[in-house]
Image (cartoon, rainbow, N blue to C red; front, side, top):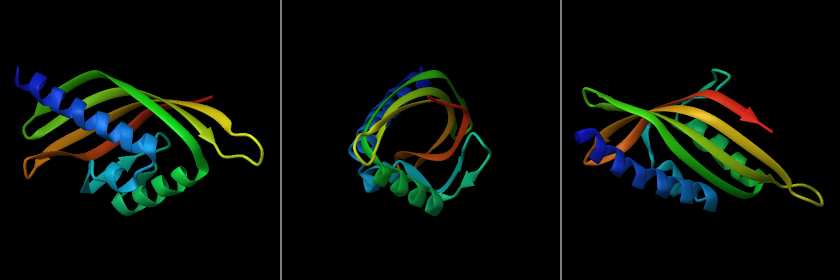
Length: 133
């Protein structure tokens, strides 16, 4: 029962993060992540918070429009850490000289969340699968 209440709270956070991502609001989006974040891409590249901020800002500058959605595959709690695996689909229109190029990105991501000062923060993300077409 406790995990259901937590995942409902996380759904609200995900919705705010998706909206921030779609609006390219970097400060609101980065607020989701703890200062100690470790973000591991599908190619095993690991970003700390500073590099994640830089990469996200760069991505936002190259895009014209973004829409994203997700669903939770599973979740569990171990001690103070909540683990969730989600599937995400993003439609991105990359800026071009004359036309925007559409790209679909589908990922599976494993999030680790920890409640820090009464707020759930992401302490780790591992992208375990990424497909672009």
